[in-house]
Length: 176
Image (spheres, rainbow, N blue to C red):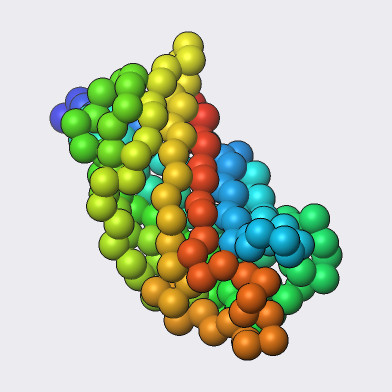
C-alpha cells in the first residue's frame, strides 16, 4: 500500500512538471550570410527541436547542421564540408532564459549558441511570444559573427560571403 501511494505521488509530480513544458520538433531556423550583388547565401532548417519551460522561462533548441537546405545543392555541400564541418560538428545548440517571461508579448532572451565546437553568449535577443490556443509561438532573430565560431572563409570567396550572419527563428511549441 505504501509503495502504491508513493508511486501515485511520483506520477502526479511528473504530470504536474510536464504541464509547464512546451515542445516542438518542427521549428524553423534560417541563416543568411548574403552580400549585395552576389548569389544569395541563405539556408533553412524546418526540423529544429525546441523546448520551453513556462514556469521559469528556460528555453533550448537543437538543430542538426545537415538539416539546413540551400537553393543551390553545391552551396549546401560546401557549407557542410568546408565551413560548418557538419561531420565533426553535427549540432547547433542554443540554451537560454527568457527575461520577464509572460505568455504573450515582446521580451528578450539571454543565452549561449554552440556551433562548430565553439560557444558564444548573446544578451538581449529580441523575441516575441504569443499564444495560439494551446500553442506558444516564439519568434525572433539576431546577428552572429562567423569569426566567433572559428569558421575560416577563404579569400577566393570572402567578398561573396558576409562575416555577419543573420539568424531568424520561429517555434510553434505544443504543451507536452
